[in-house]
Length: 622
Ligand SMILES: [Zn+2]
Picture 1 (cartoon, rainbow, N blue to C red):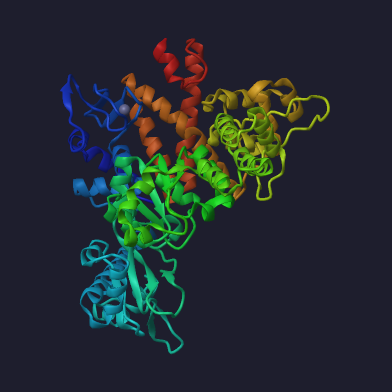
Picture 2: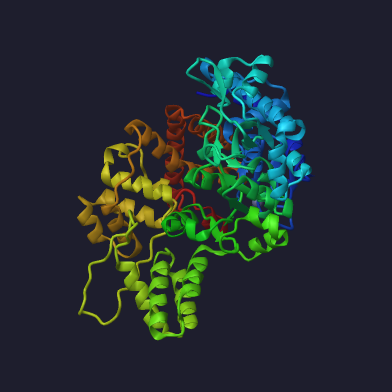
């Protein structure tokens, strides 16, 4: 459920897109349109064009959309947030198509108000109360002064039962508000008891800058050292990063996010001149976090003990590097020290720790070499074996080979020897591997050459997913999937063979090269069924059509095609449905897009423009 369609239309119609975009881009009138330097890619001559009818399009990077898209992309908001912000701007009161959503929204703001009041109260207690002394002393001991405490709105929760609860009740917050906001719980005596006691308090904000919870550090010996707010409707730790509200703009500007483990580490970097640092809130860095960061920056630097983050997480880093195109580096911190320690002892070391950050694999290989005894042949061989196992885990053959050459150099070994060691390591089953690529049948003795490491295919993740379902549960895709929906030629080739063959064996036999490799992989990979079939189906349609429909839209905008507006409306409906979890609505709009994309492709094939229906580059060159 979400915002009423007619209200979304109202927001779109009443937003003066030229005035809106002019707030961030200098636009000049050129005929009917306005033109300026594209905010989505680096350029010196303007190729970004805004149509007063409500659309923008960039001839350089093909960015396109309407005011809602522009707000989403530049402010990094989701669809609903973007519409809400634009509505505010135009003075439109939005209605939601479900009363419960309206209720949820006001419930949410009530909880945020309660946490905000708690932040203020704890902050005052830290700065002014006499029993806040130990908290102030602890901060000073870590190198943080009063200005730092004010900048990060730190607080102090006294070691008493209900200081905060009583204060909030005086401010007319109900018991239910206070408990639901995670600030207190009802104890056995049926009385409110504060969640945090005797702790230094770090308020945690969401990306909009609304206070949603706390991390609390123990000042005495009681209880766990760190304690966080319980999960509440506004505090979900897998979707929160401490400090992101302050760091967001700098992360975007620098194209880089620093990820710490502790709240004081974030403060340390910010005070040292790296305001692009964030921390997870009492949880490991998860997929959701990586996706949040990916929208903001291309590179993340892990500013914690890389060995601890190390081996077990390698798969995850590489997967993020591949799927999210995130570059993962490890900060160069002295062994056993975190950024907070550096701030206290040698603050001038903080920025260099980031400048000297290394790619994750380099960091691990260096550790192995540093620990090895390189003075003996046996020591060098052992180091080579250990390093080869790490290098073998990297999915890119090019990257692996660079490391082979480097290793051979540092260990004074023959590069071919190291290379075959890496290749052998790649064939060994890994202890922690769950989704290892299937190993090739071995032909030992038939050839003297070591087996070549298998280069994983770089097929678009969404296209891979829909193909998995096409193989394992064709009923889910049979009535809508079409070759026109594939942008990746390898995926399209695989799909064509699947459709024209009687079974998987026949398809594989008929295939060659990367298409064959992909089909072989599909034969052994199961799709992830983590939802109801109807939801899986809807999500597949949405995810499959989204990129190709956007390409179609970009082409229509470029050509001044009037149908662009209707395509955009459906794309908005898809985005909206997806974000509020209304999959049937998203699917309805997505199916409309599927029909258009397929029809377009058929027509342009007839006109001899190529069959893909979306191959912008080819058409531009033609
Ligand atoms: Zn551009």
